[in-house]
Length: 155
Image (cartoon, rainbow, N blue to C red; front, top):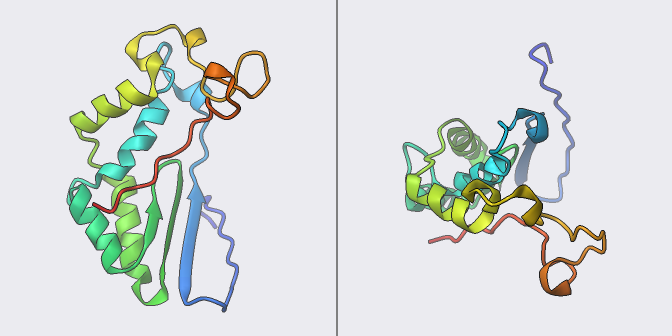
């Protein structure tokens, strides 16, 4: 498209749903300020707190009312019944453009998810796999150091 957006449309008539998926091109390693590594992970976790116009509960209710699944952040998506497509995209856009970003949510995610944000040395943080390359993290459990996005609680 002229605005730089690449649009791919794939039709599947087996379900009465519409799915929109997208990715914002970015490079966190280059765009994160020095000594603030992990801030992107904290921000990614804050998209589940609703928007500036709908708090967490109201936002989730709005999604539930149209039977939609939504995920916001650098990677975003919405899956919704075709008759509610406009509302689903509206909710996704509101979350992308106007996330609530509450202070309490920031403190919770920063404390739980990002030891680097608390001032601990970066080399003590094992975000994906052990430094020995084994894929095992703390306690030698494979996958223990794998970070994943939490599923949203409906209430």
